[in-house]
Image (cartoon, rainbow, N blue to C red; front, side, top):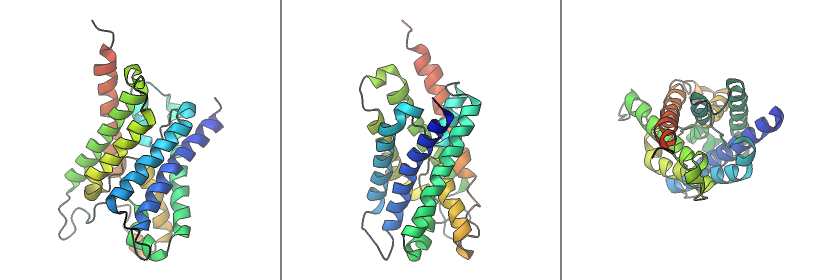
Length: 245
């Protein structure tokens, strides 16, 4: 499979997820106010990811997430060079989605939602904030751990593949993760989903975006850690024992 084709589908799949997710968030803001709320946002992310995996999973494996790619890298299921290519493509897909949403949605909605950047309602350390840095990191770790475990269970493990719900199962995991953690951290689980809108909002948002990168590192560190722990656990403790008597 050519590198160009693989990078293209990884970028497209990430675009599916990020465009749907960002657009759903912006649609809940005035003057649009779709009324979808957190349920609508969760469904948009989950359904978009399910469709993207169904379309492109057979070509690239359907990572669409740097944390997932690093998770697979940690257990030798992708090479280092290919992982870098995937991550660059994923970041490009996320940035393109965010860039288009800036131009498709009213500035009031973009600014009210900070372009859909996954963040707590009040950042750690702000007056009245109950989300601390350990909570932010812990929640993103757990949510991504669950996502990576689901990916291994339905798309890697041959026993899980037999159930034939791969794309749907992964999308549902993103949906329930957002329902569970969206109000706490924004439930990113995906550095590309965070990076795209953070970068584009930084470039276009003016003064309100001045500190938008302050906690961005958390949305790389925690999802990658969660994905790696889940990948190693599944590879070594579950798949590693599948032939044991």
